[in-house]
Length: 311
Image (cartoon, rainbow, N blue to C red; front, side, top):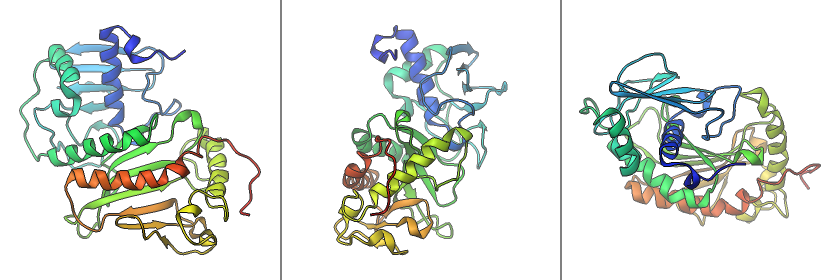
């Protein structure tokens, strides 16, 4: 039986909250295998404190927050302001971005400070604006994506940073939403809101335990693109859109919003870009509008359907 966080003793609650927050900092591709993608600890959660550092981990992974490099899988610096620590991409080891009290909130920051002391003075390039955007995006989209899991993406793409938001584990699905900023690698200063609604291509697995979810997602894609009843088809005025190997523009949504039919042989089903550079609040509101339009499609993903065809 899963126990609600509110039912845990305070110390245990804070430890699990810290583990959950550090898990969110992991790139989706760095999740250990075997083991769940869930941010809930697997097996016994262990936390120890050192001079200026916390080590916390479960049966899958160990995190260090603070000073030192004692071999933990993922190391996060505790600084007064969010700061860029290295140029990356580094798959594990010291995380590219530090964590600050602004990233943890008052209660969790106070818990950390009691355990290891105040954060270190920040040195280097500030990423405050990036962290603010990530927070605004999560605040705006979380009500529409209940029980989805959030995974930071800052290291391994040259044209974006933001969140990968993964469908709930109990759905047995690999559908994700990427939301953040995107840009042309040749013009990195031109960063605008960017959102993808996508699934892994049929037969392409990152881990052996994804095979069944991948198979089910292929069937879900057929259902989403069905000529008469598909939830994505209902966003268009073209019942045959999925049979034409070109993007289909959605005119009544803000920005450049396209449905990409499976016949293109690409991963995303929807690609959305803001047309202008805006504030973080405006970008978050734009992304929420796109996700709201996807709610009929998202609502179908929990079904484990069988034996579908394109008609």
